[in-house]
Length: 173
Ligand code: COA
View (cartoon, rainbow, N blue to C red):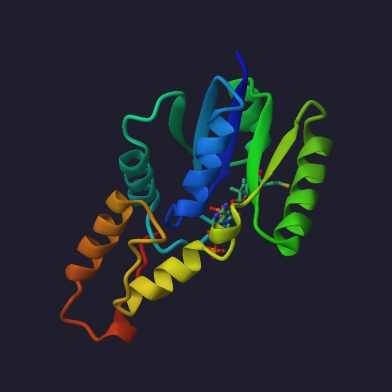
């Protein structure tokens, strides 16, 4: 069985991530979407919230598993007996980061492989931080993220609706 891992912070997951998941799952038998829950990385949404959002967005999709992980990606790779890690490439700067990460992980685990998928051109400017910023100022994010995630973020903001936009802080962890 060919197992791929798609790791990320998913803070929150965007349509760009979903497109990579859809395409990568066609290349393997099981795609593990691994959500980094790293105490050292500050995120707007808590790990529990990010897992909940990803599960809601991927509900009923076959051949997928959602896990939460802390620590090194190579340890998860070994544990899951994966064949490759999938990452999306939006730009040259993404490439630089991904090439460094791939090289470092290969030193840590020689059988580690990386599968880089170019982003769909219309999604190549989407990022989690743009989504957070648009949402914090009351903008419409429904074309940037899956509906369950737009609903989750709207709910989160409505709990803080008495605050002026500049004070709406999408913090969690
Ligand atoms: N579509 C849309 N956005 C994308 C994207 C795509 N296809 N691919 C990446 N992004 C964006 C995200 O929106 C996010 O944007 P932001 O910076 O504006 O918030 C950014 O790229 C990165 O987010 P994400 O894809 O969620 O991943 P990440 O870079 O946070 O994840 C890990 C990095 C988890 C893979 C990496 O830190 C890791 O492996 N950590 C574990 C520790 C370890 O083993 N380190 C390696 C030792 S070399």
